[in-house]
Length: 79
Image (cartoon, rainbow, N blue to C red; front, side, top):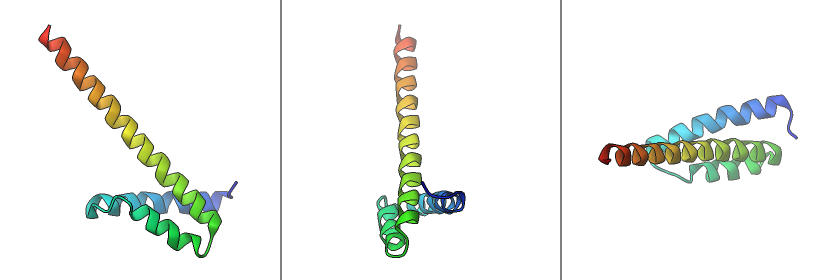
């Protein structure tokens, strides 16, 4: 496991990368950043990719729940 400093760096970079992805529409930008990191530090690359993927998974989970709730409420309103 990476030390705390690496995890902090990876988390900060993940947040910045996801913000740039959102603004530019480049949904695979994080993979390019991972490649750049991997050329110098496999440890930071792995921590970064984990940070990005967990954040992306959380976003998908939230979207899923929002859609479920919207459908439930729409169905309840139709009754």
